[in-house]
Image (cartoon, rainbow, N blue to C red; front, side, top):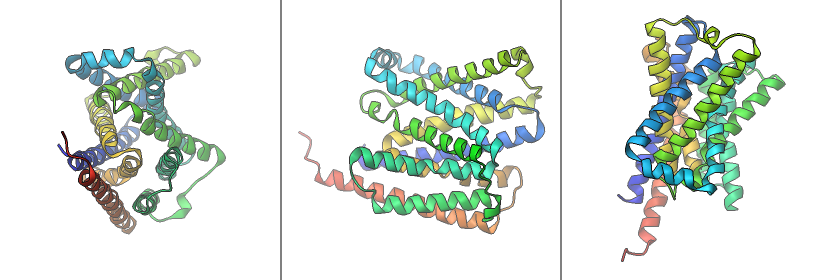
Length: 321
């Protein structure tokens, strides 16, 4: 398979993952409106479900790769940062919403693209590419329009909310960039699986600490859910919204690179909007349509410029011996 084909596969996977994140957002909205459920329990269940599924896949198909990765001392630091970043990105987003609102938290979350681009350029000691800069502007504008519906009055920025929003963006930057240097040496699925297991352990510890700190047992933190609620939580949030979403997105990022991957990840609010319209009956507004157009422009810029770069590298590469 050519580098260009790998790139387009990466674009498709990253967009697919972002769309499934949007689906998990709709499921979380459904759970919040119909059940008394805490963000720590949602984070624990989604991380635990994804961790169990990922490690089951790896043990069944990539046992030797897993042992090789775990045996490599140089990989342990990046893996730990990766897993912690995965968990922090979920819990800090929920906390950011509590201090602000969903629209403001989504806009702050989208700034991770700025951090990824900044850190990548500093690492490579080069200026950002023009298509990536234009794509960044389109992505941030699209996320802002969709999240705020074009009403700047809904942006609520108390200092605590701003701080948690920036922590959320930085945690996303961490899990996007931390495993990048591992992808060239070890199997991508194995790396993602290890990160998700670490995330699941962190989520379980936080959930348990909440019970111990409050003087209550773990059973008191388990909400009363019916069959539909458990299906939305385990199937919608855990299986599709975390296992499939993070698997697809991170696999896509490993193929297209951290900058383009972070830009494509901003398609999440667009995916959430479309799914909410189809499932929950939410109507499209003028701001939604404008955001979708800008999001499409961003995806086209990032995809076409990346594919062009891959074709150019293939054309100048020496023939295989």
